[in-house]
Image 1: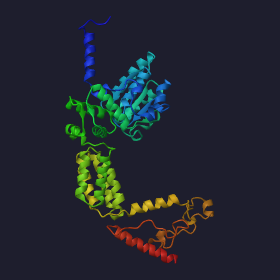
Image 2 (image 1 turned 135 degrees about the vertical axis):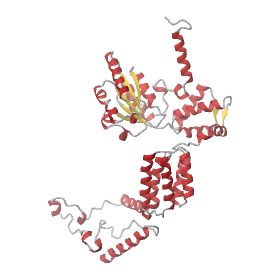
Image 3 (image 1 turned 90 degrees about the horizontal axis):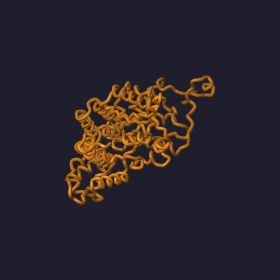
Image 4 (image 1 turned 30 degrees about the vertical axis):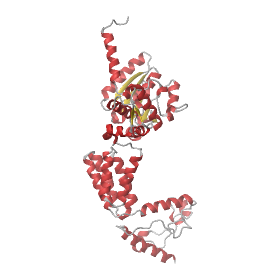
Length: 442
């Protein structure tokens, strides 16, 4: 019999509805059926892996790897619904072995009643090895289906034993088409204002493929500009200007700014380099990405003109990992200044590209016999290594006239040092060596 008006049962139901109404827009629009899911066609399209898994009737343990806000939790919940399975969620940020033990006990009860269980672990990479190992016997026995969600590379963050028992599915950030569809859903749900094409493009760029960020930001925007029928880019920037400085990681602004930083370092302007470095930090860029680019600059634009530059960049990366933000950012700033002021040379970069181009267009030339390895008697009898001159036994430690390139490449050069920094001395040394080789050849 349904509860009488005003009874505890009715009050509880009303409270649940009120709580749902107050939930963020992204939560209210969470898909309730597989066909409601927007994006991830490479996994959910006809014949694709997760679509097949849903249609098979047999769930399998898996790792869902992808950036935030792309539907990892949603897919796990939908799978539980599709297989009429008990859904147990554990947060690796807040949970521990106690939560795993409780999930095992609940799964055992469900199994006794003939029901499946899906154990979903959010941020699974945050569990340590012992905690991840606790799942193994139960995944192996089939007590429950394990679904882990992670934003980190599971090859490094998930134990090999657990990884071997789960299929990794890679989720992608939402593309612009999917984001436009989600924005339309949000507008309908809120009966909110529309956006001009420019404002919509700016909002989608800010969301950076994150559906949760897109919908919740739109909800904030709709509340701030309540009663306005159409929001243009100027109104968007005025309302969310501080937030929108955090540009998307895949947009033009991001690549323009890292390009400006790289070119300022290459152009030996420490002030401009520092400015673009701070702009990127202020824009929310992961400092680890910046330091990876600094390492690249040390090789591409400085190279052997100052070999210490590469060591400086590597030390900056290590120091940042130890200190984190904001303390570690000072070390990165120091590295930016050093790289900008270091003598510049792209000779190694040019030589590498020239060698690659040669190899790609050339035939596979055999290794000269005197340079071949001879670990067995047969190889020695075939002449491998015969006539090789050991450089350390030669005058000056150089076997002048020895041929190291394949036949037909005599005189071929790739590396041409510049007259800057340490490469001045390297160039002088190389010129002496090449002259000695030419004289011996003559």
